[in-house]
Every structure is written in structure tokens, then in C-alpha cells.
Length: 280
Image (cartoon, rainbow, N blue to C red; front, side, top):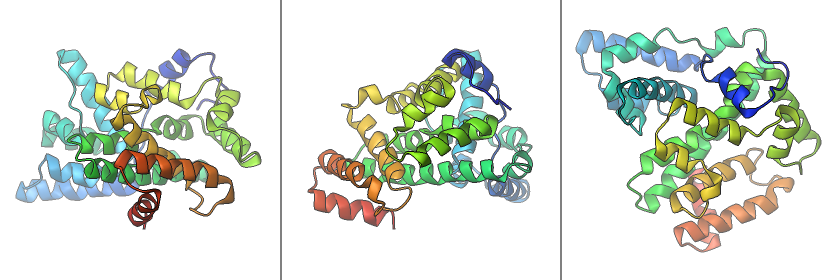
């Protein structure tokens, strides 16, 4: 475990690039059930596995990083989606590789507060992914599946922090609760010496994840419609994490709704109804 801030982004990347990524217990249980179906019927394909694993951000990250490293050794471009990554691996190798993954129960057995913190980030990531997918579908974006995954994985560095530096993750959380107006990036820099966005991009480059995923999490490219699609989804999920009526979130949520309205060419009233329907 990392208990104190590291001296640079590159030091953080080195510390986390090969770190273990635990998965949700029910993800492992689903894998075991699907392995049994494959062994008895032979009917499990890449789409079946992707549908079962696709809402579990750490599992998606685990698969994509594994396959991207394999592609780097082969000198080929990595697949952009979870389905493509599973196709490249093959069904039997997929089961053989991931059925022995560590789960949260083993990882957080002595730190339930860290488990709770991580689960909150995962819940937020799932909501962001749902927004992102539906915005992309309304925009008739052919890369809707990638935009779903980009939103799902946007906060993976925060998830890894809860796994490997829970003391620091708790301190960031404490600072933000003490001062609701404090920007997340400021709290992160105060505790870590860098931001989680910088760490995420360093890790994605180290793992050589697909360019499309890296692009869609680059906030400097906010004028790109696909990047805006992901960013608005992530911000909506973050700003509404304590409910749509949370007083401190109202200015940010109004800006988010205005952004969604502009992205989807809707009135702000229609954008509000859409977002509420998607989050119901």
C-alpha cells in the first residue's frame, strides 16, 4: 500500500502500472457460471462475455490493459472495445486468465471504508457510462460503444487510488467534504502532488490503450463532440452523486444541462427531462 504522496506523476505511473486490479465478487461469480456454460454447451462468445462484464469498470480495465500489452508485443493496434479485446484473446484463454482474479472481499477485508469509497466511484462510473451511451446514440455516433467505455473508465485512476493508496484517497475525500466548494483537482494536488487526470493519462500511455479511449478522456479537447459527450456524462454523474437537488451542486448541474442541450440540439427543458429519464 502507498501511504504517502510520490514525488512525480511518473513515479505514480511506475507504482500503479503493474499493480493488481481486484474485481467485484459478482463479476467473478458470473465468469464462473459462464465458464460452466461454455464447458457444457459451448455457447459462450465474446459478445456474451462483454455483456456480462461490461458494467464492471475494473474488469473492463483489467482486460483492456492485458490485451493492449499483448498487442504491443506483437506490434499491432489494440482493439478499441471490450468485445474486440475478448475476440483477440479467445474464449478459453479469457477464462484461463481472469478466473483467478482477486475480488474486493479478499482485497478490502480489513478496510471496509476503502471498499465503500471504491464502490461509490464505481456507481458513479456506471451512471456516467449510461449517460454517455445514450447521448452518443441520440447523436447517431458510430463509436457509441467506445464512448460508453470511455465514460465508464474515466475515473479509473481514482478507483486504483482506493485500491492501492486508500489512506490518501480518504484524505482527498475528507478535504472535499470539509469544503464542498473545493475543486476535486485542487484536493488531489494537495494530497497527491498531482491530479488523477494526469495520472490516468500517464497510465493509459504506459499501457498503450487505444488512442480513441485516450482522446475521449482528454479534457483539453473539449471542442470535440465525442470528448464533450464523455465529459458531460462524467460531470453529470459527479455533480448529481448526492442527488439532483443537492444545493451545492445546482450551479454546476445547470451548466451541465446547458451543455447537454447544446450537444444534442435540445432545449434545456428537454435536456433536463432526458437526463432525468435516463437516470430513473
